[in-house]
Image (cartoon, rainbow, N blue to C red):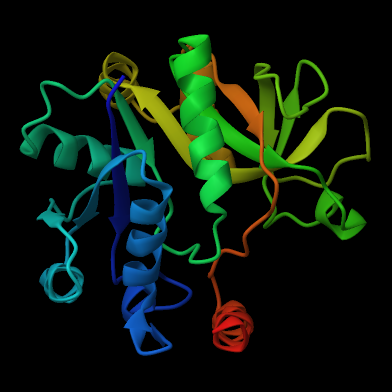
Length: 244
């Protein structure tokens, strides 16, 4: 099966405007993510963006990018437009990576891709074990409840995704915003209107569950820090500059 990786990115993030082009070790954050995706070596990698500046930056650093409409409500709608603009007739799976997670684990990307192929799943995502108990109360941390305990070999179904504060319990994990879709499932997903649960919780994966699209969950080795605020960016910059 052939996979295409699409990374949605835009400059108008509310909490940290201009985020994708912030520099770490002389390269923009979006270019770091692009390079990670290329390193995973699961398929061609494309950035989907509404901003010409992002396209220029990515191309200057050897990547490829597609200009998309400014009116998209979600990242998934953006990646679907990019997918349609690319000659994609021979693509089976579309992997959607987040443009603000430059520390994502390459092994985790490969693991999700191989579980999708092995299980012939329609839609898959990643979650990691919760080691910090404050995550259960933190509404910025998305949690996923699964039908069974996650391990390195299985790919169980998600029962629910939530932001709200919850009790610590068995099959609750930290959800990572990485998705892999079968081509037809992505098309079906974007054809549905945003669901009430999706709007209330600001979680687009609930649109899938609300329309009876099953989501399977693979265990990730690590929980990358996403960059939502200035503080997140400073923390990631320190880690990445120290590593290099």
